Image (cartoon, rainbow, N blue to C red; front, side, top):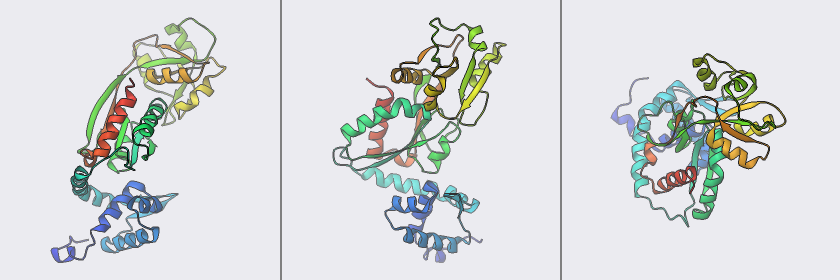
Length: 305
C-alpha cells in the first residue's frame, strides 16, 4: 500500500488511532470499547473504517481474543511512540486527589509476587484511594515486557530479561531462594539429602528443569523433579503430607509459611542463586500523578514497614 499524502491525511479521523491502540492493548472488542468509554457497535464501526483505510483486517479472531496482524503491529510500532508522547503530555497536566479519585490501575505481577504483595497493596489502596479499582495480570519474566509494550498494563513487577524501548525501570531488591517443605523431620537438609529427595518445580513453561538444576550441575550434582506445576499458589496443597521439596523465592517462602502452619522453610544447602526484582513502567505514565502514587504504593507494599 503506497504512503498517504497530505491530502489523504485530511480524511483520517485521528480518533481511529486511539481505537487501534485500545484493541492492541485489550485484544478484545468489548474490553477495548469499555476502555474508551464507547459502545461496542461504535468500536466495531471504527474498526471497519480502519480496515478500509489500511486495506488490512488488522485483527483476526483467535479463540476469545482478537490477534493483531503484522500490519497492525507495524502500525503501532510506528505510531506508538507518538501516541505515548501525546498521552504523557496530557497525563502530566492532570491532578490526583486520592480521597476522591476513581482510577483503574492495571499492573502485571508474577504469580509469587501476587501472593506476597497483593494483600498489602490492596490494604494501602482501600485506605488511601478508596474508589480505585485494580486489575492485576499474571506475567512471567518471558512476557512481562510484552504486556508493558502492548499497553495491557502500566507497570510490571518481575525479574525482567528485556525492557520495551523508552520504558522506565527501578530495581527494588535482590532476591534469593529457600527450601519449602512440609515433612515432620526437624534437622536442616544436607546437600546429599536435598539431592536425594523428590522435588516439586513451579514452571510457567511446563519444564522439568529450572535454575536449581543449573546450580547443582555446576557442583557436579543433580536432583529429581517429580512434579511440575504452573503456579506457586498450588504448592501448599502439593507439598502437604509428602516428602517433596520446593525451592522458591525466600520472601514467598516466608509468606506461605505464615499462611500455612504445616509448612516451614530453610536456606538452601548450597549458595543460593540471586536475581533482581524490578519495577518497570510505561514512559507515557511516568509523569501521571495517579501512576506516580501507584508506583509509590507498590514500593511500600514490597517493602512493608
